[in-house]
Image 1: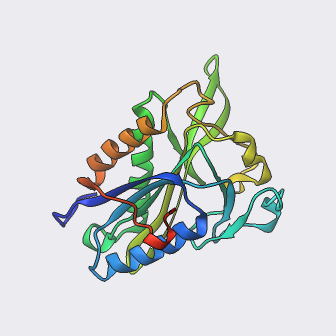
Image 2: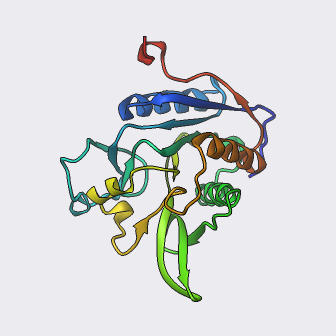
Length: 234
């Protein structure tokens, strides 16, 4: 996706788990600032404490264990998903008006970004028609035996500025996905770098995410946390 601006995209990484409501409020505020021309675009990498989020297409019957973790309604597209330690979340706040105002093309580029990142670790991530996210196929003697989801995505737009974004399973507790039907798909499972035998660190994945992002979306610059000072630990 070709940039029409010479500005760098801000790149921030949190060192603590960020509660969901803090993250959501910060994203909304930043997206409004970007739309108004008052702030730079931002990619914000973090981890959440264990929780479930419900997208705009979430079905009540897909929340199998409503008391297992907190559940948050969110305006992003998609259905239920799990976030928690060991999963890298990247909230992506880009101005599509100054790039390419095409939501479908933007989602495709986010998928390409994830596929490129996985390839850095010799993991073949693939799209599947009718299924959101990135999938890893498992074969036995050339026969497909299962497909598991390794990365999810869901976005929302405010005046052509994106927020929410992607998540990639590095080493989360995969049993925590059992409290939901992930993304409304019950016939497939979930996987992670660790589950596939790829013992990458979160830092390793962050470096690959940044390199692959820059190749598709343009240069970045490291910045401090976008959280309001009042939300930061004392």
